[in-house]
Image (cartoon, rainbow, N blue to C red; front, side, top):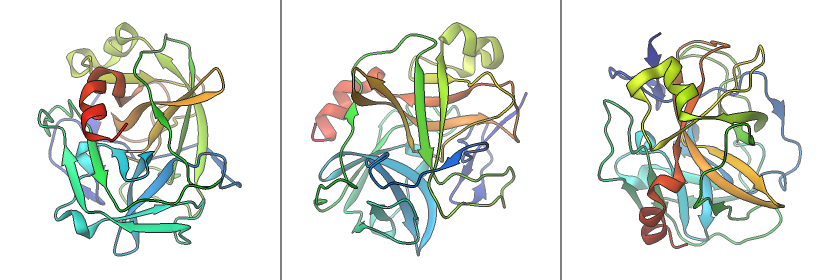
Length: 247
């Protein structure tokens, strides 16, 4: 099975790349549902998702990075990416120094912005410092395409769906050595293939507190119903995120 990813609407020639779909998801109707979710935009066009981890820091994936940073606008506090609640221009964008564009390993990045104003629609999410066991339910949100293909439809409304974390052993049964300790795989085990937009959040409700487990990284091409998808696992580089993310 071959892996593909889409970045800034251009198909890149590399062995693994990130997914940008929320196939089978449902509309988010309240801005307080996932108030940590942001839309990353260039010239008004959505290209990746991200998560608020502090007033001035956004967690994302390394494969989403645009240069210069100022070409990226961070939109928060809305379920419709075309109608921003709050907008900030990226001041800087830090990619993990060990990121590999060939293997999509260490797929982490942190955006610095001027401070957001927190309210019911704009809130940070706590970064997970620990792993969660296979079978744990997780939430995906974002504006990923609702159909496959490079020209698939990006919904105006944020989408959400639930999935289940799976073990490294289960994920490697499909993907082999492509899966590293920096990756968290998930699969909803239904006839739907669910994936958030690149860089967007995978979150777990831990005793009433939402934790940011990972950032959408890569998966299979098309709308495969059997292959798990991968997120960059935040607990694996927690000290790096802590040092650079203001948490």
